[in-house]
Image 1 (cartoon, protein in one colour):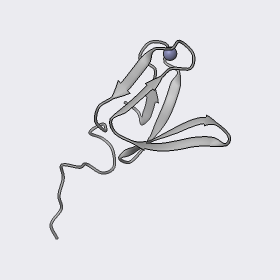
Image 2 (cartoon, rainbow, N blue to C red; image 1 turned 120 degrees about the vertical axis):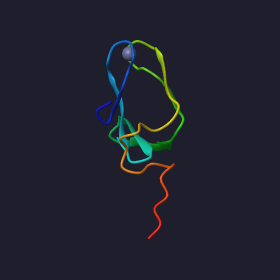
Image 3 (cartoon, rainbow, N blue to C red; image 1 turned 180 degrees about the horizontal axis):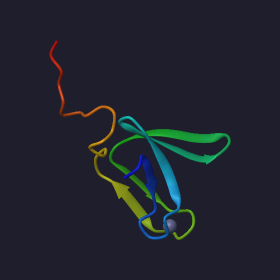
Length: 68
Ligand SMILES: [Zn+2]
């Protein structure tokens, strides 16, 4: 995953990863920042897409605890 959430069937861009959340833009005045898991229907082909957990290469890993 390259930081973008794409439809598993047609490849349409559904959202963009922002750390541990997903940025979904439906139109200029309709934007959402949602937490995982994320489920959404593709606007182009109506395929149901889902992300259960953030990708491992996201900036913040929930399993990593840093002790300083
Ligand atoms: Zn699609």
